[in-house]
Image (cartoon, rainbow, N blue to C red; front, side):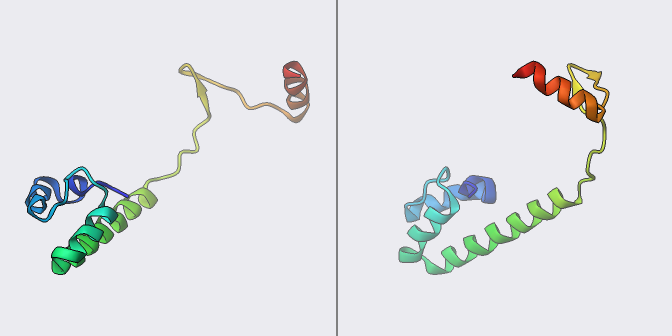
Length: 92
């Protein structure tokens, strides 16, 4: 899971007073906060969930790349079925 500072930004440093390091992952921070400040644990959990959902939505909204594969910037022509066998035998 993401680090607390990735989720809260600079605001993560406010959680130091509750024993949470800004570089810790969110799940560890939530465990620590449950003991001392359960209201902040619930808030951090919700913020992390929303951030994860936004990241997932952003990932899924990207168009798929149907471009041909490239090797060193040069387009690679697709192999025909007979060439697959020859190319595979060269590596054996």
